[in-house]
Length: 494
Image (cartoon, rainbow, N blue to C red; front, top):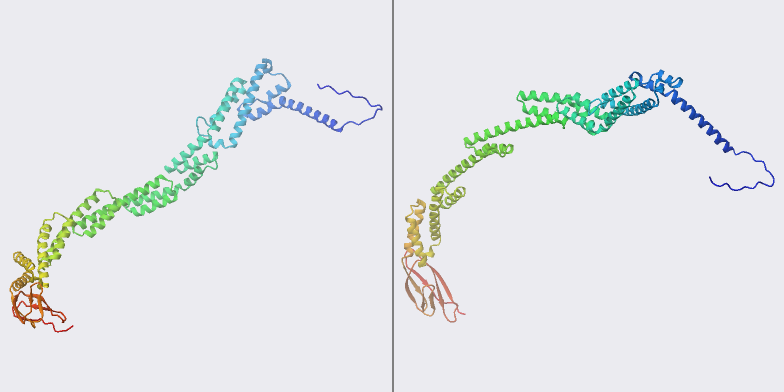
């Protein structure tokens, strides 16, 4: 207690009125006390009756028991305080069990708790009835134990919600795969009672409601398959998949019939390629082979046909080239024949006909070119070295068994060789004042007339005279052997 301050009374007493706040506080305190008394009486007199009404036929205390509590001492009271403590403990546990039961029922446990998962709601209710039975028979220890077990079971139910959601979703999905729409709907609705916003359950429920139509489409597709209408079956299965893209069974049906269609297309393509190869239509064979390769690139049939096609087409191409080269040889077009044999060797470097043909046509082509060159430039034969080479070419060509056209050219070359090998009489005339030089022959000097023997061909004479402009005179010595006269005189003064 705090020490009170010492107060001095006033010199003259003064009257004062009481504080109204103090009066109100006294009134409130009195009311609170009365309420507490009434509440205590209610607990003793009313609570047992209410418990009996709540329990009903399941074993709650009866009205007579409540009357005993209020009006007269009961057997429990006579038996002593421990029994009263056991009853009170059981009543507390009962209230806890009822509270948990009410909360779970508000959360839909009657829907989702029926399936056993360690325990179930019907099992919890059975345990609660057992506890009520013990309570009614005044077996309070057994009742308290059973109420505790009931509370544990109810708590286990509450904690099992995530696992029930998981297993319910999985069971619903399994039912969808089995085309069991009723089970799927039941499972997903159970999950939604636990978790209304569960995306998998909402989606699964929507799928389950479509399942009868999906099943109908699958049956139609199977009927189309039996009738051999694979393309039509594929369209039906595709419609089923579009209706439920997550259904494994419908996707498997669609994939299977698509595989059957690909197999049939593959076999048809292989058969067409085989037939085309047999009749030598390599273009059609390649088309069929390409279709088969797109369907099954690694198939043995594709490799086998491709190998035979390559072999047959190479052989056919070699035969075509050989025929073409032979035609060129008959026309004595040795150059094109030689090129044809070279193309054949690019296909098969060991082709015997091409190896021999290339060697033969190369020699004839070279000879033909050389003969043609000499015939086009006959004056080159006036050079001794060129004439010797031409004579060798002529001799080689004469022994090669060339065709008629080449023999004719070679004969003409032989005549030129003979002509250019025989000197012809040439007369050069001048004025005895001009210095004359015959290129590649000799320096002739001044003369009025100079006779000499020259082989056929083109020559140039050069004339020089002091005070006059130089002159150059080109002249041709004919192969005919007729004498040629040439004048070389400087006439133009400077």
